[in-house]
Length: 203
Image 1 (cartoon, one colour):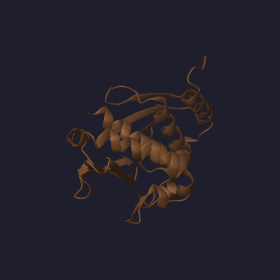
Image 2: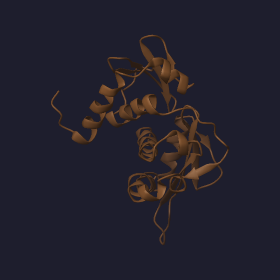
Image 3: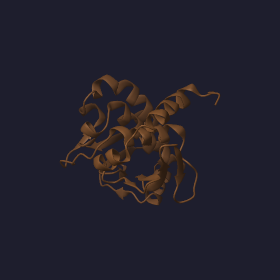
């Protein structure tokens, strides 16, 4: 295959190749939310169930809808290969409060927080409707806020404020504390990106 979009296709091709060597028994021993039927893994991301063939990678959506974009597929491959069940201790943390958060905070702010603020803070009613379509749990904090079952035992909250004449729109994304141990910092960035893109697709 001739690679045209290096930013997305090169990482995906790398993990697709590594995925061939994955042991299905190892995956299901680390991730209780993932099942294996001898041909495909089953995994849910933001309420949508995907089947992922192994060792020759292929992905399909159980609902018959569109396949996720390559960055999401890469995230799912990394999840199957590297993540693990980590119990939630009951706390919520911002990206900055987790390991390596300070190092990645500048790209995270632009890629996730600023994007969320100006995507949703300028269209709060549409944001609410989209989150409700997704079955998210409404929150009482933030001008509008919702909680999502992201993947496995990992949950996320997103809060938005519309701003006014003095202040621009703003947003915050909060993670269950088990993200700190269950995901690398770069995957936490991608998780925020995936959440925003998915909500946007419902608007």
